[in-house]
Length: 183
Image (cartoon, rainbow, N blue to C red; front, side, top):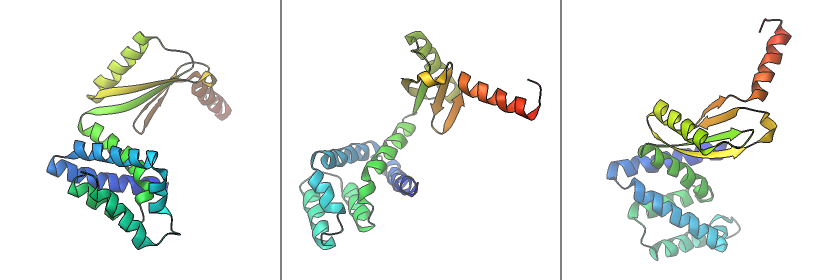
C-alpha cells in the first residue's frame, strides 16, 4: 500500500510539471522507454536497485545510461531524483499511474466490466456509451468473464465499483433477511 501511495505522489508531481510545460505526453513516452529498458535489460534495473553495490557506482551507471539517451532534462532529473530518494524501484508503478493521469488529461477513463457470461458486442457498446454519457469522457473498456458471478455484471470505473451481480444481490438479500427486515 505504501508503494502505491509513493508511486502516485511521484506521478502526480511529474504530471504537474508536464501540464505546466506542455510536455506531459512526451514524459509519458519517456517513462515507457525507461520501463522498456528495465524490461529488456534486467541487469540494468538490478544494478540500480541492488544495495550490495556501491551507491556512487550505481548512480554513475544511471548517469552514463541517461547521457546516452535523448531524454528530456526534466526526465533525467526526475530519474536521478528517484534514484537519490531510493525510489527507482517504483518506476513501473509510477509510469503506470502517470499513464492513467495522462489519459485523464485527455478525457479518457479506463473502465472494466466483469460478467458471468460473454457479453454481445451490442451490450458492450451500450454500456460503454452509457458510461461515456455519465462521465462526459471517452471510455476505454476492458471486458472480462467470471463464471463465479452467477449472473449480472460488475463495472469498475476508476475507484467506483457498480456491482449489479446476482451473487451480490443474493448476499444483500440474505443480510436483510438475517436482520428480520422485509424484502
